[in-house]
Amino acid sequence: MGIVVACALGLVLAGVAIRAYDLGAADLTVDEEMNLDVDRLTYHDFFTTIAGRPPLSFVAQKAFLQIAGAPDPSKLRWPSVLEGGAGILVVYVFAYRALGFGAALFATSLLVMSPFHIEWSRDARYYPLLMFTCAGFAWCAWEVVARRRPAFLLFAGLFAIAAALTHQSGH
Image (cartoon, rainbow, N blue to C red; front, side):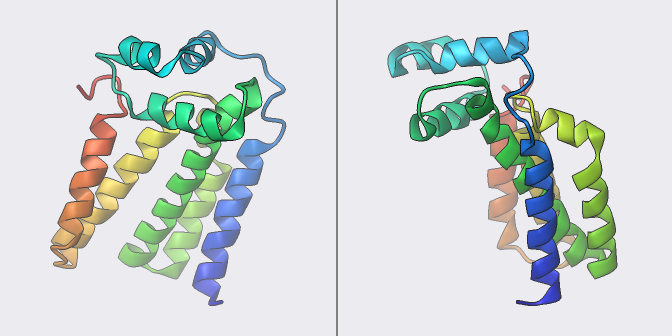
């Protein structure tokens, strides 16, 4: 395994570990309680309840909880932790492709240790998914414009749609 891949993997794993540490210790916020209530609904009631709201984060959370078992605070927050880890990976790849190995290490290390990113990646809300989709869009758009790789236009479009389906003002 090359040093570039090893560093990416190490930074993502460190970021996920930091965000997952003692995940269920804090009480749920009011917004997380609302998400938990929505996730406990039957599928019909679930989709009726989220109608009119950007659904992607709700759907991702419900799908994860269907796999992980009964919802509890730590399980409810795990999708955010994993989305935060995905955002770390995208920032690493984007920085590496745009600026090289040193810049990728620097930028990603800052994100891994960012108190803001850590906090929001431990909250069962849409914030880390939005960061991941926006960073993915920026990377793919950069590939299209700067490197003249039109195939990335499809991925940029998918990331843009995902961001619009994630953010509360995206509809």
